[in-house]
Amino acid sequence: MKIILFGAPGSGKGTQADMLAKEFDLEKISLGDILRQEVKKESDLGREVKQYMDKGELVPDSTVKDVIDANLAEDNFILDGYPRNGQQAQTLNDILKKRDSSIDAFIYLDVSQETIVDRLSKRRVCKKCGANYHLNTMPPKEDNICDQCSAELVQRDDDTPEVIKKRWNVFLANSKEVFDFYKKKNVFISVDGDQDKEKVFEQVKEKLEAREQ
Ligand code: AP5
Image (cartoon, rainbow, N blue to C red; front, side):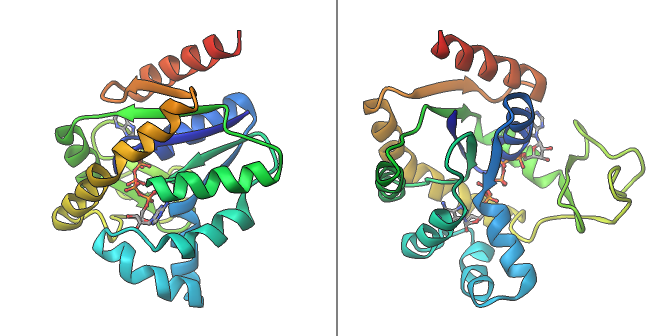
């Protein structure tokens, strides 16, 4: 199965991608995570992309194309954070076509702006392993300490109110062309992402299983 998870910043793409990867034994490919690792390593790529990420802007399509091409599994994957505009959707289509392959499902997590601001301003991530928490809905057992590796929890650099607003606007400006692309391919699935993570997961699972029958 080859799945794309799409949604506004904070819509729960990373959270659902982890759950779906486990349930369906898929490889999770998160472009945001890959780029953040490059920033952490201070590689040439990391230095190039940091300037865009810190401002909440999209990294140029030509740069992320090579990253996706190099990291895309042959089959059984879930893509979190790619594509984000019509050009990237076309690029992904071309990459897959060369492999005689195509996307099976495009899942849109539909959330309100109010939910996004709440989720991102209260998100905390582990400095070491990247595990995700929310101060109210998914708090760590011990304040500011990761349940999984005991490292410190921090706020992401792009989770400031100003950058959240920019990321939301970038999403609004690009989402329609992505929707149109996958609606035409007949793989579009929309889910109410405002519910708690288990309910969202159940809905996604039901809709995916219904497609397979
Ligand atoms: P990326 O890291 O992909 O950020 P994003 O799209 O803004 O999404 P987030 O990771 O912030 O949120 P999410 O939807 O994964 O939600 P999460 O599960 O964490 O990209 C960062 C940057 O990289 C971009 O701005 C850009 O610069 C660059 N980039 C990436 N891809 C690119 C591309 N294709 N082209 C160009 N540039 C690119 O959940 C958020 C919070 O809510 C967490 O605290 C979580 O615990 C909580 N939560 C999740 N689900 C629920 C729920 N159902 N109920 C309650 N709380 C929930």
